[in-house]
Length: 372
Image 1 (cartoon, rainbow, N blue to C red):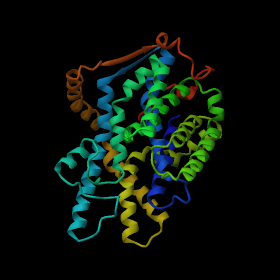
Image 2: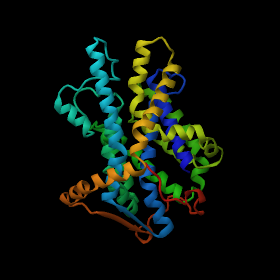
Image 3: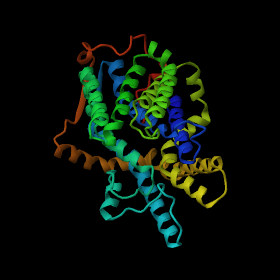
Image 4: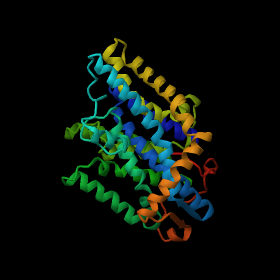
């Protein structure tokens, strides 16, 4: 399960790299690797809770620990990437070089810089053009406990939230990207529920569903003239959901367990943090083709992972950072008067319609820890 999950991340990372180095003609609408990342995030963040709920009859989410782990996992590598690209922008502009449009830009003012540091979209350009997606994902991290609570208490209300988000974005003037991407995160929760229930017929038809949704997405974008690269298209979100559901079965699971692909998945966050400016600079300043530029970005991402991400997300450094962050998070939770624990028992969802027909859990899901 872990190898397949990391490999699915790898496909999302490679697909995103394909978009940014003009290989979209080879991998159709490569930007939808972002949709896959959103679904996987919803899956990984909620799988441990849902697995515990099924296996032990009770699921518990400690809000302080959850937020602490998210901050330590995401913030240090992000700040390292911010510092590197800020320094690079200073060097390039001092030499009179033109920054690659859309991939690198200097914030318009100090307030905009602060917004980017706090994962709140600024009005100016991003130091790294990809970082807007992390800002969206970061905000949904802190809404996820509420969505999980709703899912375990009332699935009809859960689906109603997804439907309202879809209508708000597509049928009103409420065009906020957070609303557009919300269904993808919510589908990740559903995929996690399917996984802990053993899958059943859902997994047998999920890959076919992914193919069908991709075809529908491409046809729809061509007929309507909508820009295919945006993360606001339901068919691409459904395709990502189907792929995640299918990734734990049969031949696809075996393929996704391939060690090199799984390793790229482990480093996928670092690849995401550095790939776009590097690809843009390589293509702007050299004559190498897009394939070489993409490979350089992948290698740079792996190097960033080894130097900046890996040391702070494992071992003693991670534990020290968690001890440092935890008191502040605890104070914030108390100040906001948030419920410190989310608890659900099997009895609380017994009356709800089952998402799948229980047929026994997959032994490979026996570990309740899946790091998002």
